[in-house]
Structures are given as structure tokens and as C-alpha cells.
Length: 157
Image (cartoon, rainbow, N blue to C red):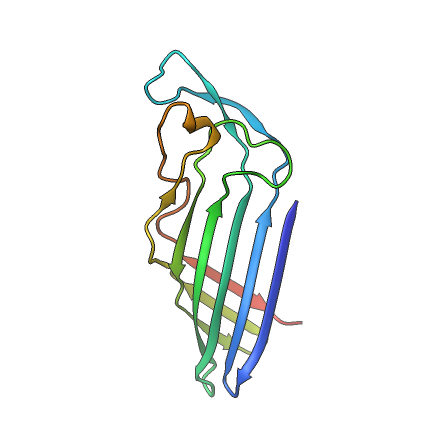
């Protein structure tokens, strides 16, 4: 199940602020996939099916409004929580979050908008021990991307 919200508001003549966020609820506890905990080659733990979240808040400024070139700057966070909202949180997972500054540019032509943004990490990966890692004493680096690039196309009808 996906929970999602968006907001967009004009705050000045050529400036808008926005928010978008989503949370993926995964009620399934574990996969059928197993792995050996670090330092325990004869033991196995199941891989967890974690919830996942992302949030973005920023501004959009029209740099050259006559040419249709708005720029955007945002802060972004992506993460995997320690506990799921629904269901159990057993098994191996790497709960963590990453914070980005997310600059971008758009090109608007008629009803079409092309966008590109490249989030730059401003905070190191932060991870803390999951349920499956507490017994072995290991902490993973997180299962999130270190480099992102988003290219988009939208058309107004």
C-alpha cells in the first residue's frame, strides 16, 4: 500500500514552494531469501520486507520566464525505517536514511514539461542495527542509492 501526499503553492510572483512525500507499507514480514549473519557462516536469517519512505520539500523559481526555464531546489530524504507500521519487523534489514540537496531545471514548451534533477548527498549514510543485526553486533551501511538522477516528462491535458 502506498501513502502519498503533495502540496504546491505560489508564494511570490515567480516563486512556488512544494512538498511531496510517500510511504510504502509492506505488511509482509520476510522473504524466502536467507543470508548468513556476519561471523556466523552456519546460521541463516531471512531477509526482511521493509517499509520505504521518501520526502521532498523545495522551491521552484522561474529564471527566464519568457523562455520557459524554471529552476528548482529541494531537500530530499529517502529511508528504510527500523520498524514497519503494519506487520512484524523480523529478519535482516538495513534501516537507514540519506539526506540530499536536490537542484534541478525544467524546460516548458506548450503543454509539455521536461525536467532533470541530480540530488547531491549532504549527509552520510546513517544506519542503525536492525532486529537481525542486533544478535550479531553488525551494522550495515543501508540499502539506498548513493547517486541519483531523475529525468521526467509531464504533459498537461
